[in-house]
Image 1 (cartoon, one colour):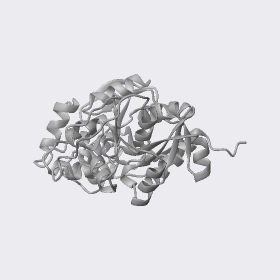
Image 2 (cartoon, rainbow, N blue to C red; image 1 turned 180 degrees about the horizontal axis):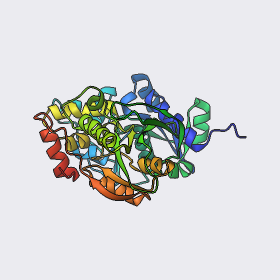
Image 3 (cartoon, rainbow, N blue to C red; image 1 turned 45 degrees about the vertical axis):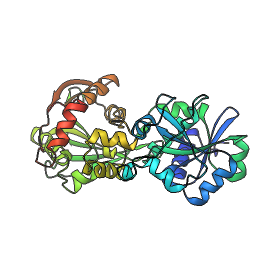
Image 4 (spheres, rainbow, N blue to C red; image 1 turned 90 degrees about the vertical axis):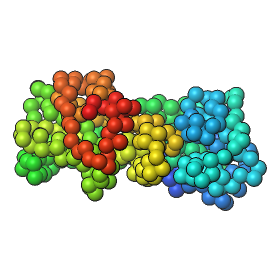
Length: 362
């Protein structure tokens, strides 16, 4: 029946369930796990999980490194739950907020052997749900029956694997004229991904020639910098400087991608800020949370540019990774145009870290 949800739709449902603290079932042939986001775990749900079997906390290798826990599965560590572990104990393993107050969390028993593919998928879903990358899991038999009997979303890893590894298709929803301070000849395009994720926007200035490299900017959403004028980053000044340059040249395209906090979401970005207040730089903070330096997917930007009819850009960026990603995904970068604005005493260390650890050319 066409009413049956596709794997893409089921994954969207699974992400929503995890955000609400509802368990999901992941299966790989006859092997299965029940998984619930550690961040959303309740006392009652923990008791329910324990009634099924021996729970395991799946965390990333980055978080395991901070916890001094062994990681036997490359990018995933599986930590066996002690009998007396409660919701707070699990939360402290997943969230670094109390690392300095309670630095000794071990000894931690890391599991080795067996396949960690299902646990890896559970962590991927927590990341996509903009939660802390940690999931409490328990192995089960007959995963399909378990999901049906308990009304839980069932994800078949054989079908979900490709969908989790590749960017979803993205389509134009609407565009309309939008006069702006930098140019009255502005137009806003709204794009919606098929996976139920956040919409992304393209601001078109003037009527750029599709046959020539267009002045373009891939700008990741920054609520604190773009809207509130935060002095901790250079995002707001970069946004306004890029739009002004496009207005001055009477042509350009600015992509506003909803990938807040280098792709970890606003809540996790604020967690990173809290860690920065403890003395960690932006990369170290991300790692302590369990994330990589940068979790953004710039393939979204190349897909939008292609949808709008652009094949070559003059890219406004200080980040060589953006240039490489555009080139790798069919958009020719004819020129990298520097965008050196926004330095102030409160973000000087942040910008220095971007240059030294993330390769930004400042």
